[in-house]
Image 1 (cartoon, rainbow, N blue to C red):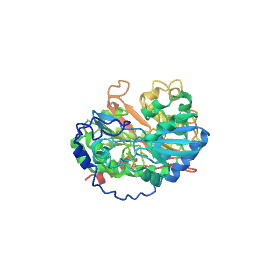
Image 2: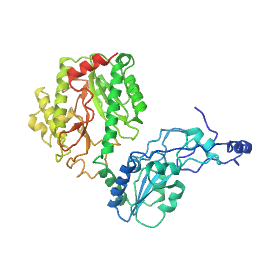
Image 3: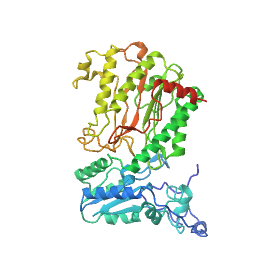
Image 4: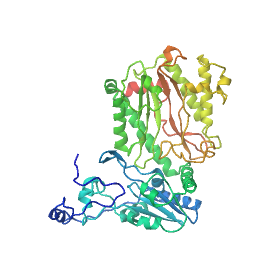
Length: 476
């Protein structure tokens, strides 16, 4: 990996050291700054532009006469002088479509301006010396004109931002995204928290474009799961890591990235809800829990879980436990309808699972007592809620008013997961030995419609017989 002779350029600093720096021979700098063609660059209007404009209007209407500041954020350090690949703040991209670093959206009196960091001219040292922003180091950034033409929003240089932020008038800021913006404007905790809340709540109901992007993410995820099963012989040799790498290849090839760290839990690792080390083996006779989601280029993500028999066939005990979780999921999905409480899927799924635990003789009390809000002893083996909102964040809309989400009711256009699980820890002495170390979760991405719930990830098999057939016919 190449290394620049320039000190690390912070995400919010000015451009690189100029040619009078004694480390940079003046002749070399002068030679580098001449002889470059100004190539024409055609930019298409982004399909999200009209949708984003409507979102900005809706947000502005919530805060008339106020200045709203929504940053994209900057680079985050991975190690020393290397950064993670940039991923913008969700609210910023939802309002603009912009995915370049350091940009800041300002909405004031209904008018929006995107303050952005464009590519530097070839008359400066930045393009060949700055490892974060220089075209020869990190690739060419779009110009202000190109950003404006693509996203259909007025643009100004980010260097002009401070003057706007320091102007008089009530200002609300989406905090915790851009340290420079946070430091520039004195915080009003209550006002800023209300902005974050409203931004979350506006994203609860997805528009037509968003639903299409979520379907794209789910379709890519289906292909990624299928890739993993196709390479099952390699999976048996290399273990959990092979699944992680195989799925990432598909997510990156057809989208932006994975939407979250893939969970590949073979055997007892499946009982750890967020097992992301993915360092274990795949052992025939055990189950493996795969919780993975591809993130589309638009940053909308899928979130899908399947539990598979490593050998390709279920044991009778595994099948019985799996069918219990599948029945809970199916009955939970049936509750995803307009006007029903968001938690209805969870309530129904837990009823099904708890009755199953009672049939297994595991409950220390009656099923009715276990389901009582003051008891919930069943949760020793279920551990988590069944649903969360899904969108550009895998756990979407998290700063909403709790009375709206998760305590509120469902509306058409909302997208949520339904993902009951059953987990018997390897050291759990309250269950029979044959259950210990078994973890099962089944998760799909469900759209609330005016009619039946719509499963965006239904292409991946869930029925145990269908899973056996899928693994047998897909594995090469």
